[in-house]
Length: 243
Image (cartoon, rainbow, N blue to C red; front, side, top):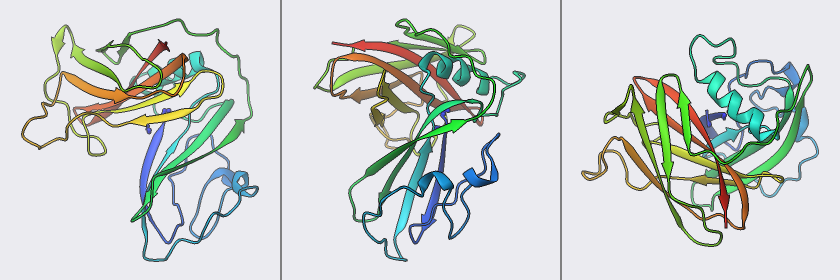
């Protein structure tokens, strides 16, 4: 989940000369791994857009959501819960969508995507109903706010543990939380940064993390929040309808 999942199963790496070097993911084959001066087989059909100067630094995140949204929610819980058999095992048998979310110095942000099938025993889950509360590894995360298509929608996610608000969230990739929204059906992708920055003198380290999300159309969206506490990144999953 980056499953960043955004750890979504996401991983972030600084790369040089336009060559990405990503850590190997559990259950990936050798052909799916990226090494220096090489590319995985599933990129062979890609079309080059332009050359990247060797001095350009890229900030790249690989995001791997499941096409089965209900299964993705279960996966987000499993990989974030120590003691679960799937804890830390992100890439399992299923139909995945792969996004490369990156920005080169002096260029506009760019997101590229492709499909990735992982062979094995796979049973799709029934569709998810709207959900605004997620429980993961002893933490409860609640979502307040509504999605309205075509405009900035304020979403506030509150983190608590054992009934007490968590007020010492740790920065993760430069923020107290990262939110990925995927539209049901075509998995249209939106990565949302929170309001405020750690250390800016006004942004509190919890329990609330506020985002402004602008979804493009009405429909069902699956949202995944990554937050870090006590040196562990956890992913909370939600489903909302946009009107």
